[in-house]
Image 1 (cartoon, rainbow, N blue to C red):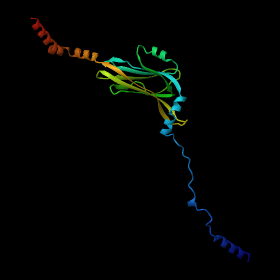
Image 2 (image 1 turned 60 degrees about the vertical axis):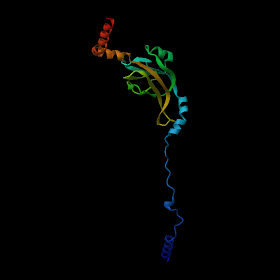
Image 3 (image 1 turned 30 degrees about the horizontal axis):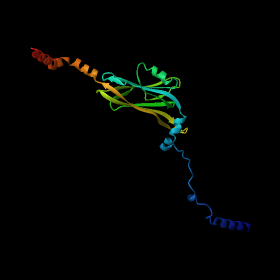
Image 4 (image 1 turned 90 degrees about the vertical axis):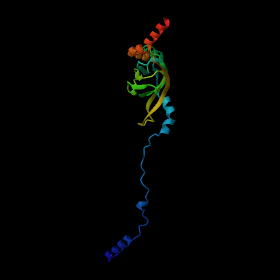
Length: 216
């Protein structure tokens, strides 16, 4: 009899409706933590704060104000965290500074030189680690085939991380444009020296003959 009662109770429990249990499909999906990378707007918003927290160093950009067309032009940018601007200018070895400034600096700096009139060749890497004890120099060679006033533009950027994140961002700390006068004097002298025989027979000799006849 006891076995019969236990069997009936077991059958009743198995047939009970389980609608009170939650449906697995209706459960909310698990949340996943997403790490946000600083956007451009956030970086631009904090650019001034970044500049205010950066170290400072002196900078001189030098390039000849006037040169001949046959001479290669050397432009140089010098950043020094130790020397004063006057000391840096005295060590230019006769080169005149195009501009001097005190700029914000970081451990990595970039310098770019552009010109629509010159062919620009970078002699040193445009991105360099900045020394804390000595100067760091960027050098470019400029070439052209025609005289006149030529524009040269230089831009200096500091490579920084934003809010401690490992996201590199360049912040412009300096920008300047200057005019360089290129004279064609040596170009004319070279042309005459390479073509003097042709010039003598076609231009100078007829002028000499005409002058002699006029004197007679």
